[in-house]
Image 1: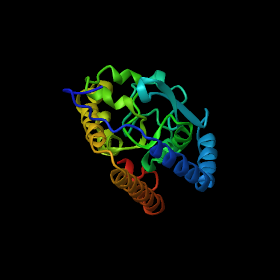
Image 2: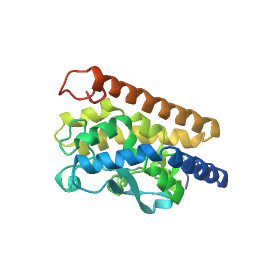
Image 3: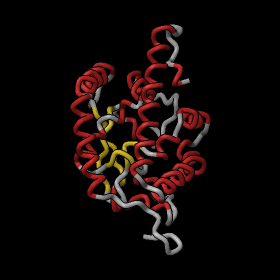
Image 4: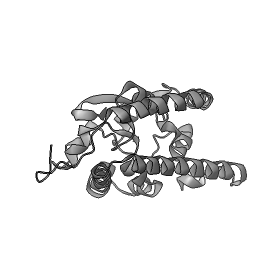
Amino acid sequence: MSAGGTEIIGRDTALRRLVDVVCAAALLAGLAPLLAVIAVAVRLDSPGPICYRALRVGRDGKTFRMLKFRSMQPDADRLGPGVSGRDDPRVTHMGRVLRSTKFDELPQLLNVLHGTMTLVGPRAEAPRYLLYYTAQERQLVMVRPGVTGPGQLAFTLRQAAELDGVSDPDRHYIEHQLHGKLALDLDYLRERRLRRDVEILATTIGLVVRTTMRLMARTTHGPTGEPPALLQ
């Protein structure tokens, strides 16, 4: 697929797949104790499954189930829009912690091992939003979606908070946030290199560490009953 006659995507390669498998396996092994603690916390916090299996569009437009630690009520899909803001009442107490630290994304390492995702790539999109992609933006579904990537890093807590103040979160997301994130992912694929992937992974790890430290500090020293600073 091309835009203006010029293909712009950086395709998946055998080397990328090898790196994905090795890194995902190592991370799953190293993070096993944390994953076990989170699984128990999710189960104790609210009724429902530990993981949420979200339908997403993968490489070549094929759908797959993306794993996440459940951060919302089990019937959240029927109770509200496909996107959620900072103060969405469907989000559980534990879910707020997982979302602020990005720990809810950790099960996606299993998707990486399975081959439906890569460590760094375009955001895995829900099929309902693919209808609003332009012809150029549809090039993003020619490659595996990533656990992290420019489009995902751009969806900040501030942008999530914007969804709390609008009557139609889906429309706001489509009209004001979706295409900006897709543009970042397209720019990434135009210059897809190992160095760029390392930079994105480092940024992601730094974000997770900073948000986790701030959350711990707020939990320890913040006013009782207030949400963590990261969620404000």
